[in-house]
Image 1 (tube, helix red, strand yellow):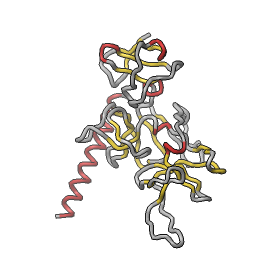
Image 2: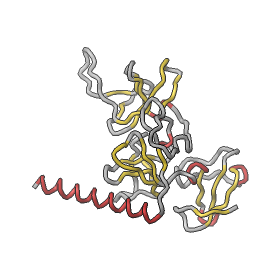
Image 3: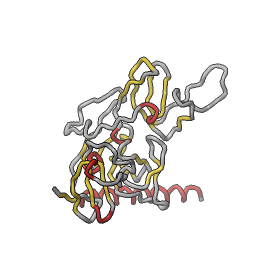
Image 4: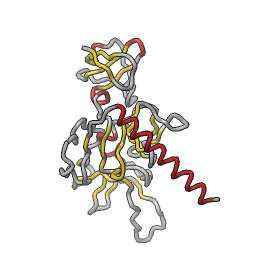
Length: 234
């Protein structure tokens, strides 16, 4: 069986991972395709492979951690350095991303599919997914940084975190879970409320032309904002 993916010029064939002779990495998320039950979409002549959830990721989503603008799925970063920093996990990426060009807000495909609430063995309450953890002043401390309650490293303000609002228990997304939930929040209704983190992720069907136009408009607005800022500095 073959099908065409927007990110690649050739048709992709569908396999199970165990049918491939060598272990390969997904060209979308850059993680290994090592689950023997997982469907893999492959172009062997280009050494191009996609996990099933990366191949079927929606082209356009509204994410509750970035409510002002939609996020568009891009096959590669458009920044000058040809890389992006994920606003969920904080790690760099060179392949697929959900991007808001106006805000320079980017997510790995897998990070855009993180559940809005999780449980963790180190905490008794459910943790909700939030963006921009606030620093809570603590008595006797002059530290103006918030640290992960699991790994003890700093929680950056421009990254997502799983938080318990009542207990001030905050952790990195990667410390909280490795779960990826493809399509869990795809819903035609914007009224649904999913998870403790609030809001929902809604996939919207747009044509290739509409997506291209939307992305160009966002880039133009971003450039205009940058020029206006430079003008104010002068």
